[in-house]
Length: 542
Image (cartoon, one colour):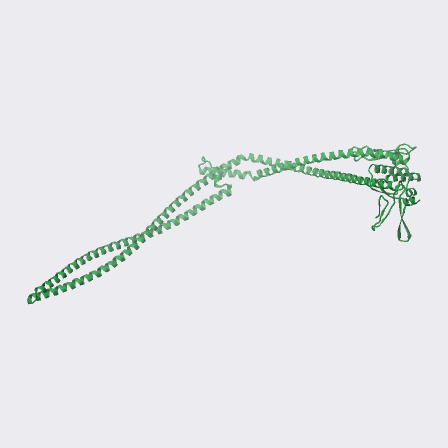
């Protein structure tokens, strides 16, 4: 790929550059100023082109996005309509079921009455069971308290027994001590008596012998008195010991009697405790059975009627008192329920779910309608803007086309017309031309050269209004005669002020008017050679 700059320089694919030459329309200083102006204008044109292209791309993107969103909204709207119809059908069906439920409300009320009667019966059974369980529990508590009291009393008696056993041991020890002291006292008495008898014998011997002195007699008399005093004291002590011993023996006998009574009472308490344990075990078994019956009644209420005790208590009616009548009414209601057949117990929930779904879909539908209206408004605004812009540009191009047509043909008249259509953006465009000396007619009725020159005039008119930095023309003047080729080349040279043209041509007039020529030749078979000629340099040298 090769690129030719506005200065006439050739950029090759390998990176090499061949210098060009200035136009031969002015001197070097003028050319420099012209080049600067061209560069400035080129920059402005490029910026303008980029802005226009961005605006065009943005508008096209917005339009495509809006169209896609519109199609999506239409599809969603259609789906919403279908879902709305389905919801309406489901709603109608649910309303029918609701009417059926309302019609069978009397049966449900009767069934409710039956349930209330059964509930009352169950409540009475439960109350009776609870009262019996409470009584048994109170009785068990009473028995437990009696057992505890007997246990406390038994512990107290055990402590008294231990205390009395300890006291008995002390009494026995004291009795042994007293007995030992009594034996010692008796021995002393015996010893004193023996000494007294001995002294009396000695006194008698002394009296009978008359050989003792009065002092010896008095001494012996004193010893006798002393011994008598000791004897009396010993006798007194022995009496006291005997009395004390008798008291201790009496206390021992009393304590032994109390101990026997305690043992008898303990045996009685043990038997009483055994009886209480048996009664307590029996009461606990009865309590467990009553709890099991209450649990069975509760499970039956829930499995049959889905009622708890608290809910059943709220539904209780005091006027239902006759159990046989309630049972009879229950059987009648059950027969009526069986006669009704299967009932959709989830109808209310289904109706609620469908209603919520309908409200949700209705909200979505309303949102889609609002979004559709917004997008349609945006599309209308874009269409209005595009139509206004198209009409403005079409008028400008039509006026410019007439000017260029007259210059290219040396007179005549050329215009553009829109075909009749409801949408101006989709309408076709007719090119009407009137070469000099001919009538106004459609472009397709002209000769080949006239057609080509008319098309070139339209192209140049668009180029005048919005020049592009580069333009490639491929033998567009091939059908022109020499005079028209000269006009074409001259006008093309005028446009090079803002646009660089790359022209593929075989016409001599076009080659003569160009600034640089590039040709491809094959001097050797299979070998292509690029040949370039700078016509500006040749003209300057000339």
